Each structure stands twice: as structure tokens, then as C-alpha cells.
Image (cartoon, rainbow, N blue to C red; front, side):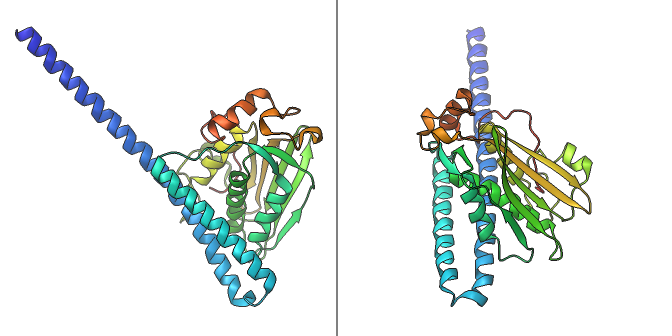
Length: 280
């Protein structure tokens, strides 16, 4: 009888410990997800703040009014997705599809054009990948904002799209403060690490996960006092399959990469060894 009682007590104790561990893990996962949501909200607030500053000078310009409405629509859609993410506890999964990379880069650059730093753009019409337009735009916007934050009004920023063999390369170059080699090597790739006073250190980690999930990489070269160059390399879509559904696309993108896209949306896929380029 005593043996049975001890076994029952041990079983109950183990069950309680397991339940407590699961609850702690759920709280940890929710807290991490909340941090990512807060980071996205911070970026959206910055976008609206920039629009309001420009509105003081351009509110009577019909072209600005059109851009303002498009910006507000984008922010509303993104915030609705964030609220859905909080309710469901996970990032909504969308099917991968053809993305016009050059159009995304031009749109993000135009949205940031009201900042104090001049932004020079170089386009590559027809540059395309298989991915998620909204999330790629988020990655580029974050990295470009990092360049803006690190660069004085006397500096300059260049954003360009080019092709290298089987890859489309998005290059973001600035003449800003740069980063120490030790930081780039030891801390840049880790979440919650940042060189900015008000930064959260999440955007770089999030960008890395998504780009790696598409079979690409983020590379960084940086020198203190001279600036940083960010290179996002993504598998390009062959011209013959530009208009094909994502599931049927072939060419430079491997079948393994394609099969991961719809399942994980790129963010939660296991990331291969890759450099990350940004001021976090």
C-alpha cells in the first residue's frame, strides 16, 4: 500500500512538473512573439510619423495625397495581420508566388524618400523571385531604415537590384557609422542584440530567418566610420516560369526550397549558415 502511494505521489509530482514546464514554454513563446509584434508596430509608427512630417509641406500635392492613402492602406493591412497573429499565436501562412523584386525595392525607396538622407536607386526591371511580397517588403524596409538611422544628412545611401548568376541581389549601401568587426562577427546574427539606443535587435534575426527560408542569404561588410553594405541574395525565377504558379516553378529554385515555402512561409524554416547584413 505504501509503495502504491509513493508511486502515485511520484506520478502526480511528475505530472505537475510537466504541466508547469509546458506552461512556462508557452509563456516564453508568447513573450518572444509579442516582442516581434512590438518591433513591427514600431516600424509602422515610424512610417506614419514620416508621412505626417512630409504632410506639412506636401499636403496640397495630389501625388503626395495618393501616396499617403496607399501608405495608410498598407499600414492598416499590416496591423490587421499583427492582430491576427496575436489572436492565433502564429504568423499567418500565405502561399509563395511570383514577386517583382524591382517594384518592391522602388516602392520601399519611395516611401523612405522623405528622410534627411538622399537615397539613390538603381533598378533591374523584370527581376523576380518566388516568395511573399509583403514579407520581402518588410525585410527591405527594415534594412533600409537601419541605413537611414546610421547615416547623417551629409552622407548618402544607394539601393540597387542586380543579377548574379542564379541569384537576384538587393544591395543597400550607406556611408554611415558602420559596425565593429567584433559586433558583426559575434552579435549581429543573434536576436535582441543592437547598436541603436532605441533598437530592439529583432529585425535582423527576423530578416535572416525569412531570407534563409527562401534559399537565400544576407551578407554584410562594414567598417566603423565608413559605412555598411548589405547584400540580400535570393534565387531568381527563370523568365520561362515567371507567370507559372509557385508550386510549378522550376529553373534556379530547388524543389526542396519550393516545398518549404508554403509550409513555413520562410520564417520558421531551419536557416542554413549565412551572414546577416544590417545595423540591428
